Length: 174
Ligand code: NI
Image (tube, rainbow, N blue to C red):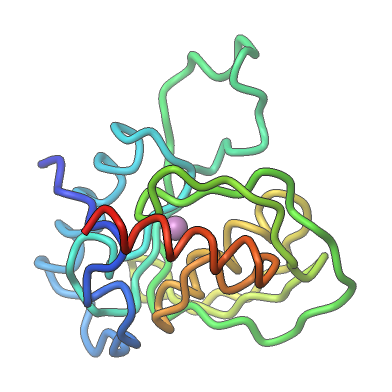
């Protein structure tokens, strides 16, 4: 396993739509393991393949993202899951995520507009078909990570003014 470099905006691969995975082979399996390790090292609760420069529809997430950071349960072994070709097939309600952030969007946390509940269809790492409902933090993680697969960064879901200010700030640094 290896910790990979996480690319940051305005890196191109972050802004491109990703291709579906055709075959879950050893290369893909090993990539998801690296992604899990990279996510925990960052640390983050979700990571999408374009963030490490691979434009394929793969995401990983921390299955214990709902456990508070200072809770004792958090010290147990870390666990992540990978989803291949994930899709949102149903979305209901609307919420505002609090202080959303992204490992590829440095120095920005913001509330973002999200659906409250989503139904996800995906393959697991064994190629089995999954369909499940999520709400709360997992609904936000899924929407955030699947957005990455469409080349959408979370500042597209925040206020227009905040987004403009952020882009200006980054353009000055370049
Ligand atoms: Ni992100």
